[in-house]
Image (cartoon, rainbow, N blue to C red; front, side, top):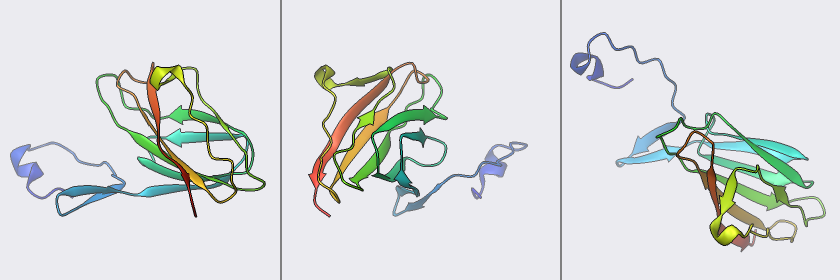
Length: 137
């Protein structure tokens, strides 16, 4: 609970569960483990800002519970190559990458890439980027 909030805003009901905590004035988010994923995976903004997955097939990403228009929230996916490696993501049509170039994921089993997406218009457009690539286990 937020201490003192009801005093400042009487009658306001706080009933939201937040998947984060604050330590030393920094918000620390819970990581959602998607585990081994197959041909589809949904990045759910409502679950966490951070998702870990292990690719076991080429995978089509979808997005759920995106922030409403006028709000912005980045979401990161930490993708590890599993199985025999060389797996790729297919992104929703609304995803835009810098210079129109879709990032190439590492192909080596056990190595990982970190991708980040954000939207500010309720999901009409998603800005995507590779933050880190080809990270050794």
